[in-house]
Image 1 (cartoon, helix red, strand yellow):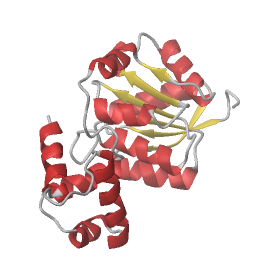
Image 2: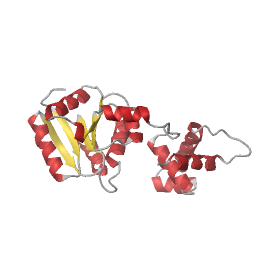
Image 3: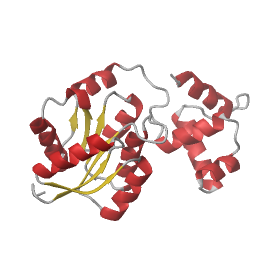
Image 4: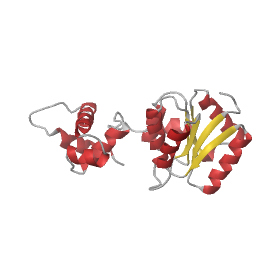
Length: 218
């Protein structure tokens, strides 16, 4: 990728930081083709502009939790190989592992630990070239975190399990997620298999899956 033709979609809800990043990126040969303030706009913008690189904050509207990181994981699954760099003030362990697990060409940088602009730009170039850049603190946290029984579930399977925990039927979940009931049935089957809940005559596997989910929540 040429240093003067890297097209970027930037997602950052803070106006001042967003404008500052646009200026910095422009100085180093990146072209910001769109700058948005929330995760849904990010998904739409990437589909419209097909950028060479996505840079996104993690906490964005509406809940300021991990919307940007979840969007990054979703984009990587929609467009495998799309270079994505997430910026954060903290380590969101579950989705950080999901993002890193999508393959090469990703970055997870902690804002407070980026020493200088040159280091930041070098990290972007590495990700653009197909490399992976992860802050050492993120690596340390991932290596030392307790085993998550839900770690093997995809983001969509976690959504389905959360709705099961609310007592919803497959048809109700299908309506909430705007997918077919058949698709939900497949997700439920995958969830039960990944949680190691084989069919038995004396155990309600959906109840056991909910108990596992509730026990894994922070």
